[in-house]
Image (cartoon, rainbow, N blue to C red; front, side, top):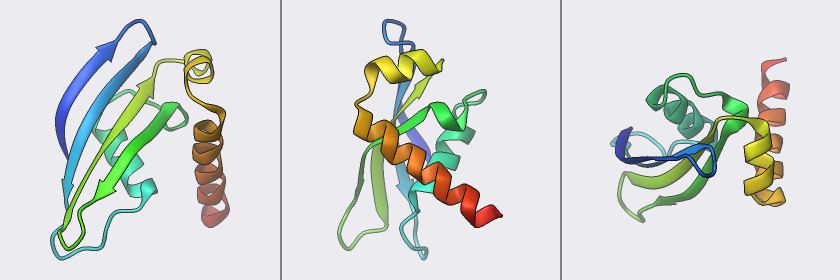
Length: 101
């Protein structure tokens, strides 16, 4: 994963990153894999405070771009993000927990 831009947004208590992933000879990374890459790119971040935005894979190319918001606390996350995005990421975490059991 290559971080293209990193911006600290103090007003919303989050870090905003845009990233690029080249996945030559591999399938498109899953949302879970992308979340893990974001966590590695931003040390000290927590999985429950990361929201993936605008993930886009180029047709016919092994190239994926996207954006992620990494919040500093749960209150900032809930007051800023739309409910459907929070539910989407919560359901992603529930699926991961079921797979690990």
